[in-house]
Image (cartoon, rainbow, N blue to C red; front, side):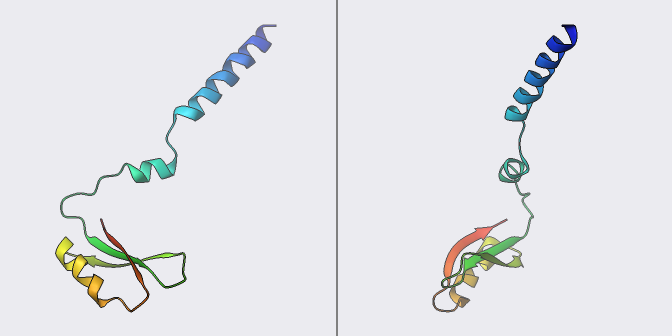
Amino acid sequence: MKKFCFLIIFATFINANSFTSFSIADEYLFKKASYHAPWYACYMEQGGTMRKCVGPFKSKFQCFNYRWKLAYGQRWLGCFQ
């Protein structure tokens, strides 16, 4: 009986811990870039579903300037660090 109770408590602990821990995707979303991190211009090609990024750029202004170099039909997503 003691083993069964221990097993129930242990399973509950493992299950509760898995709901409260961060996944890799959450860790990526909460990362903050440093002040001197490079910038990347991201876009999608016409009819495509994959995000493509070009860079690195030294400043946000250089990154936004790349927007005007995109070919017709490509969708601008923005600049990211």
